[in-house]
Amino acid sequence: MNFELSDTATLEQCRAYKIELQKGISLFNRRPSKGIEFLINTKKVGNSPEEVAAFLKNNTAGLSETVIGDYLGEREEFALRVMHAYVDSFNFKSMDFGEAIRFFLCGFRLPGEAQKIDRIMEKFAERYCKCNPDSFTSADTAYVLAYSVIMLNTDAHNNMVKEKMTKSDFIQNNRGIDDGKDLPEEYLGALYDQIVKNEIKMNADSSLPQNKQANSLNKLSGMDGLLNLVNWKQTEEKPLGANGLLIGHIQEQFKAKTGKSESAYHHISDVAILRFMVEVCWGPMLA
Image 1: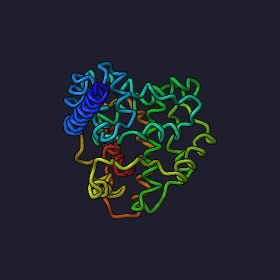
Image 2 (image 1 turned 60 degrees about the horizontal axis):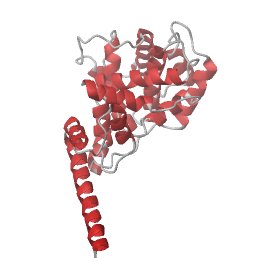
Image 3 (image 1 turned 180 degrees about the horizontal axis):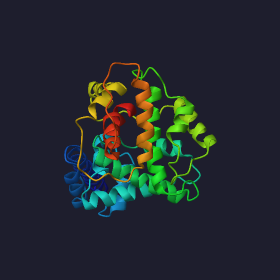
Image 4 (image 1 turned 30 degrees about the vertical axis):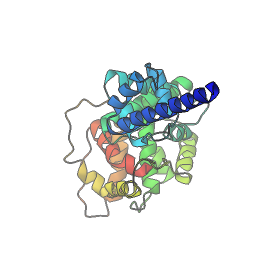
């Protein structure tokens, strides 16, 4: 009899625990900071950034991959520390750059705001270089190359881009990005082949209805539309360190692509414009 009572109490405790955990997850998916606060206060997750990062990274059932990305990109101090702990939990040692990006993006969806993307990818670049100290001259190179890879992935795998970037174009676009030096052509060529042959994709967000996932593809209207959009998306925010050389290279590449059309070409003169370009195309191209 006592055994039965004990067993029943244990089942009730497990049930109560699961109900409270799901309540916290549901709150996180609506208001991530409040959700994390609730989960910490109810002892469903530890209160250190490392423990919260592990909770998010372990793909707890019901967590929205989209909201995880938004939370990781927040500038609030605790969320920022969680993001740093999240990125630092990855071991990119001996992993080539394209596969490192692919591996990194498998557990969350990048946010739509350029500032959030910047914070996450700057930390990714720092971590990659720490794991592979001989890979690049500085983390700035990895940061810029990550954007270049994303643009190549968009170019290669979006059906609206008819004139695809060649391997020669990609190599030329990345001249001088390693603190004024060129990365080896063999390295860039292999990276090009890898991305063109194997698109970087992300898992569909299981918490979103299928129609909303499909609708995200409609946000990208091709390269001409992207260039026209940057005309009104000006910002006074200080650029976050991207190498201006890449802007010029991407500018020339897009100019060549749009030269045969009647679309207006808008001169890209600010590193911040790169951030907007990625804000527009990054989510749809990873959908």
